[in-house]
Image (cartoon, rainbow, N blue to C red; front, side, top):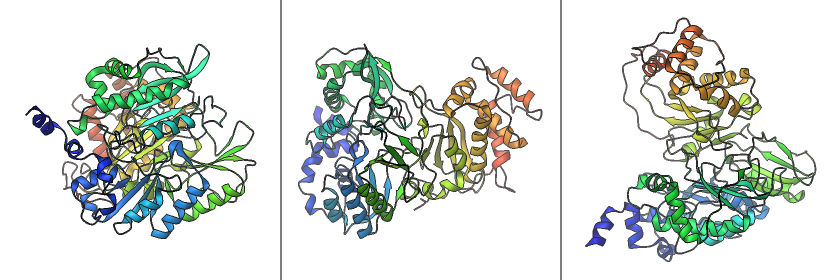
Length: 570
């Protein structure tokens, strides 16, 4: 009786697992009719790297995991052949993997088999699994590399991959990042579990951070691990989440919510029972900001080249070109979580090809290739972003097509979410804007600047944000956010940018010694913009009023909200 009650409380996905484990489902993989899939089939197939939905019947996506972004030239070439043979679309994921889109039901099994050869794997790349374990592209070879972590990543992946106990059986997905570098191309604080380079008693090791996700930063667990201790901690962590993570409300099953429920100390105690050793308190975090260049000098006086993809998209001829060059020049290929390709070990800074886009600091979700996105991000990034200035100042931008946040928009200097809106009349939609994360050190996520900016006004608005930073004189956007933006409220920052837009100015924000009160912010607005008037003595209402005044479609009533057309960009 008690078991029946518990089963009813389990979320739908867990009820499927209780009836049939994903690993057991795999035993009948060859007999699946991909033209007649049920709900349970779609859940199970994710554990083997296959994604589809009921409203995209007959259309599939395959995801490859590349441990720490490593891939051989031969494997890269094999992917190009498959993409070309089946006329697929390839994108680099924000976890240094690959996604193959536009796969037809007639070909899915055949392509899946081809991909799961030559050291490639699609296993556990979707679903309730430990996802692709990521690291910095300069692991072991860069100027800032202290501990090479790839052997650890391989060991961790080997432990969970095709392990019947864990295949699809975690309460929710787990993202893991690890870096032995003191400076990274991108931040790893969005991961559920992050091992960050630290130093204690003159020994390099790792501090542990837990509970991150696309919209939250991982918290300091006050644990220091030496290199030799890390794998045992990892296995203890996975087993703890497997045993104690919530399997009820699907929206509350991530590690973040487990920490919310039992506290970070409670989670530490549960892990320690599995770890069977006392934890050592955290060491000194060894992280600093570096703006990496297109060509980077490596430890052994060779170079790395960052091939900037077309916002994550790669064509077969690009892959062939890069592979041929790597083979001829004995270079290594690595994939970055910034969705770019890195050639490691070049003898000179000369290449016979150039990057197709200025995308080195922009992370974009799948956009119109994903059924949940409301805009075609990869096609429209040029239209909506001031790319030249973003590239010049190495500003980190996260572009998400929906609130799921696959572009890590809260862990960047400027973050964007595409959303449908009717607040400004019959617009095509718009973007929510976030700015000012302290992402290098994980101190804070970006704060909301605007809840919605119509697409047509997006580039002008973002250009203003960048130009105010540019004129501030700070070396990078994080310093600007820390010294300037952090002293003001979100509402004030919205009003400051709106008034600059309204008056066609670029008035700089004054530096403040401490956080400003509402009264001091209002005084500053009135002094700086004589035409500024507060609406009903509320800053938030004033933000709404000014935004509608500036952005409502010409000739339309700002109070009228036309119906939203619920269509995807596909």
